Image 1 (cartoon, rainbow, N blue to C red):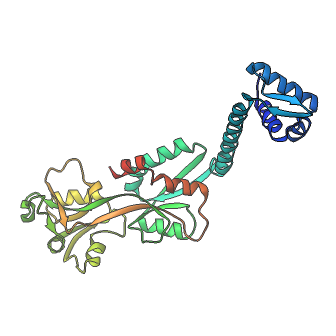
Image 2: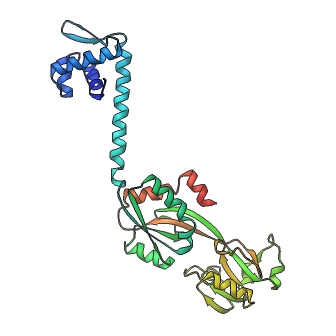
Image 3: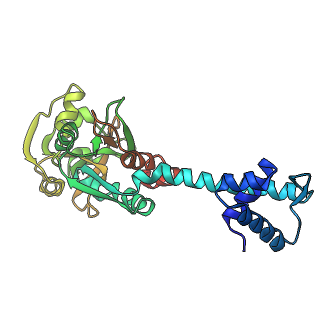
Length: 298
C-alpha cells in the first residue's frame, strides 16, 4: 500500500541519488527506506530506479512518475498553506449593528451565505438607529455596522440602495401626476407634511436641508413608517419614505417617484481606529462576490 511517506521517499531518492541520504531527509532508517521503495515499485509493477555504482538513478518510466509525485506533494503543501492562512477566521464572533429595515431585508442573504462559508463564526446582530450605529462604531463596541450613505475613504462594502418616494392621499392634486412625471421635491416640501423618520437622522427634513429647502408645514412627526401611511390615508398630509418601506396594500395612497431622484445607499463599514480582523474582512469581501451582489441588488 502506498502512502505519502512512500512518495516523499521517491522524490528524496531522485533528489539525492542515494537511498541512505534520502532516508535521512525523510526521517526513515535505511532499511525502512529500501523496503518502502521496493514496496512502491511492487505495487506499481515497474522499476522506478536503477542501482549502479552506489547511485540510485531514475529509469525512463521513473522520470514521469517522479514528476507527478512532485506535483502531488506540492499540491498537498498548497492545501496546508491555504488552511493555515484561514485558521484565524474559522472561529470567533463578529458584532454587527444595523437599523431594523436593513436587518430585515439586505442582511439575511448575506448572513446566510457567510454562515455557510464560515460555520464556526457567530455573527451577533444588534438592532439600533443609524445614529447609534455610528456611535457604536466610533466607540469600538461593534466590529462592523450598516451605515447610510457612507463617505469615501471608509472601509465599506456596499449592500444596496433604494429611492425615496412621495406618498400622497389618493385625492391630492399632485396624485394626478403620472409615474413618469413624478413629483418635484421642491413641490412636495411645500405641502402639509407627515414627517416619518423610521428612527433615522436621514429623513425628509434632513434631505430638504441638503437641497436648500425647508418643510413648510409639518403637521405630525412619527417614527414608524406604518403610522405615516395611516395618517396620509386620513388626508393629514403628504410624506416621503424609502421605497423598501412601502406597504403592499396601497389603498387610499398614491405613490410617485421624486424628481430629481434621491437615493439612500447602505454599506457595511468596519469600526475605525482598530485593525480589521480576518473574520470581519471576510464578511466585507463577501459583499463583493458577484452572485451575492446580484442578490443584494435585487
